Length: 430
Image (cartoon, rainbow, N blue to C red):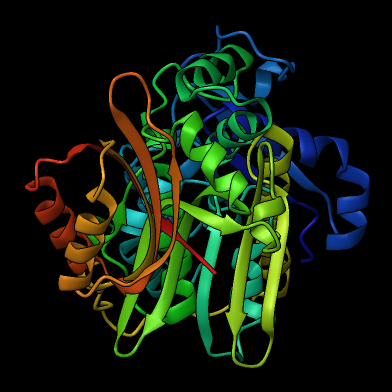
């Protein structure tokens, strides 16, 4: 007997859960035409229905018991938008065990427990889709899995966190300091009251772990990824970068380096002519380099109820079509074992170094000598005049070289007694 509709249950009704419900509700007629039958939200579980929300949910859809979604006989697809590792993983695995297809926007869960979840889905013969976990409305996971699948991917680099990009954009446009802009971002709702996951690069780390696993076909240990946030970026760094033709962005990068993968998250100076340097405000972008496609960039809103809800709803439609046709999207996980990640000290990078030194003859020469002795090659130098406290500021741009050599040189330079402070060390791309 032909199926008359596909029924969806949502776990968690915060920003993303609400956005998903709204997209499926407002576009119900066109979705039914595209899928062939209505795709209807039949139940929503949330622990607190007393919270103020921007939309009304009919009483008959509401539940406070997750099991009424993941174990219900009349639910075909479970959408998980709770966030965090637990209890989200427990609920997702239970849904899979009950024969449900699963759609999730949970980046932390997929970065840390994704392999287990995908293996369980393969055994149960159901779909697990997670486009909304990375990049909001940007279809980067689908692009890597489908459109670019025939390529040997060499690099994936992205601006994957809208909060940090907003902060750095404001600092660049206004010359403001980090703390001032962060306070504004919190007041506007772009940053959480506790912004640690965003500003320390943790959110971007989850996302690049997912993208690297898809792009390179190896499971990525989240704990082995180097990450550094934007909390030490100052207005002075922004000023120097602008003067030298760069924009500072928080980048998440994964690339091939021989038999190893170089996967990291940190702020970097990006040449103004690079497309990623033009990505401002709360927008995200992902830059992909492949052997056949050459260079591709996808750009869009990286967060928010409707942008992320759009990505989640798109996955729901894919699952619905597969349920109707009795098929699956693909073998959920095609990774071949764990990736060998290159230690950060072995990674070859260009670097920007800003330091305050004693303003007297011979200082620059002494520092340059140490750099040379440690095999650190200087590309350019900018010096600004002394001040009344007897200090001058020097900015060095280094040619590419291993991080361990740069940090060895800086330790030796600090022992000379002529450096007041090494203020900033940032990577430079391009």
